[in-house]
View 1 (cartoon, rainbow, N blue to C red):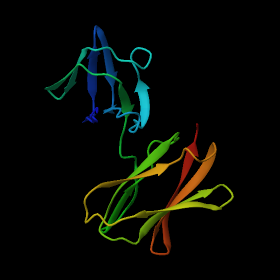
View 2 (cartoon, rainbow, N blue to C red; view 1 turned 135 degrees about the vertical axis):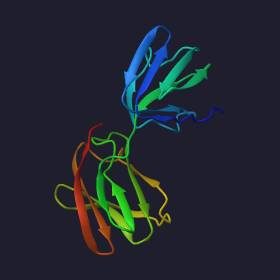
View 3 (tube, rainbow, N blue to C red; view 1 turned 90 degrees about the vertical axis):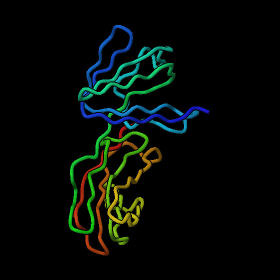
View 4 (cartoon, one colour; view 1 turned 30 degrees about the horizontal axis):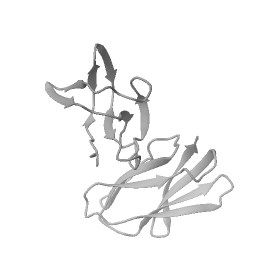
Length: 173
């Protein structure tokens, strides 16, 4: 069974063979029988199949060497812009947006009465997602979008019954 490998860097230089790739922000996900997928694939080498080789990754004078890897995808990741923040709740905008298979909301909550409501352009409720209390530590909410049609949707953050913020989500399959 293959294991998942995730690394997060703010600025990365990647050397694959004699090729140098510079990317602003990535994480690496080694697929476990197709169960884990990266957020947004930005580079594949060559033809979605990386060779049995090595890569050096540099960030702020630190080097990590990956030896003998297969099916490693390079993917962009970040928290997204801050959507809402108070002393009990911090919620970032969904990322990636536009979304394909799924999108993610990073948050930290000291209360358990927050939720995100997804609506279509006609205002019809599609799905409700509860943000569970995390005691202030960071957590992620993955919102599957593969069952939604291409188009524009809106997601609204509620605390109790009060709407705090609303943003647009674009689905592109």
